[in-house]
Amino acid sequence: MQADYQQLKAFVSSVFESIGCPAQDADLAAHVLVSADARGIDSHGVARLAGYVRLYDNGRLNPKPQIRILHESPSTALVDGDRGLGLVVAPKAMEIATEKAAVAGTGWVAVQNSNHFGIAGYHAMKAVEKDMIGWAMTHAAPLVTPTFSREKLLGTNPIAVGIPANEEPAFLADFASTAVAYGKLEILQRKGLDTPSGWVQDKDGNPCNDAFAIKNGGALLPLGGDREHGSHKGYALGAIVDILSGVLSGANFGPWVPPFATAGFMQAGETVGNGTGHFLGAMRIDAFRPADAFKDDMDKWIRRFRAADAVEGKKVIIPGDPERELEMIRMQDGIPLLDPVIADLKGLASRFSIDFKIA
Image 1: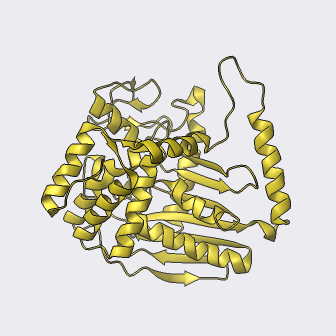
Image 2: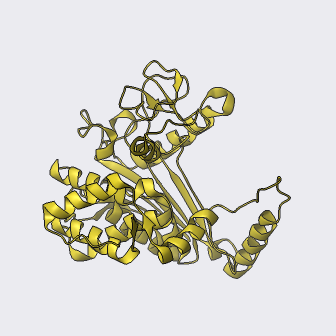
């Protein structure tokens, strides 16, 4: 099925309203979620909608959070998300970051007591819209082993950095600190396919290709897969994200980060902090040099890398290009949905008595 973007967004918004979200928050959350599908990041789009509802059912999601600043300086803030949708908490935290950057040159916001915030790139790009460099990262449930470990201690812990250009589209790097995001395993599970090598290990720490490895006691691997291919670097990246998102914010961290509904378990057990955490930042370009001159140089940077001498049959791309190009196609032709995702959405439509019109 090819779903129309606007109809899909309206449906998702109706589901969020049905669990008690105010209309404005429901619309924002739907926009963040469906934007992932439009950009081809299907693992973080409407396939996760039922998961947010399960968080609500389990009492872990507050549909009407009172988001507030707990502590701040001219360029920093600590925000309490009040167990709200991360899809709503993170954009509001980034708004605080850009407001501080507008005054102080940079703005950095640590968030505690939140939930899963969707694709990191969405939040980083909110700063780009204001001629700023945007940073967004979040930790997640412990599904990942540090290098040489059999114990899961980290999440997929993504990092996104958005950088504006002048005539060229913005640079947007958005990537997990693992070999792959957990949502990609879910897609393979739905399709009945094995994983490529270097994604997962079994419960004994041996490399495997089982898309259900985590549910069978195994784990995701850090970016690099194994020590010989640089997994210690992926481990370090994930650790940095966890420390900034959790230790610095006062949220849970490491193996204590609460699970999202798709992790295979719902309760976090022991806690050492307050909910899930994020870390967001905005850097005003003209706090360093004239913005137009910087963006002109970014155009040169992007064009030079695009013009790189590539191996036969390939071309060098700029981070963000594939997603941006796919978004143009999907906004016109529709968003493809897998049958299991459609079944989940129809189940939600039935539960909340919502008309299921998305195509």
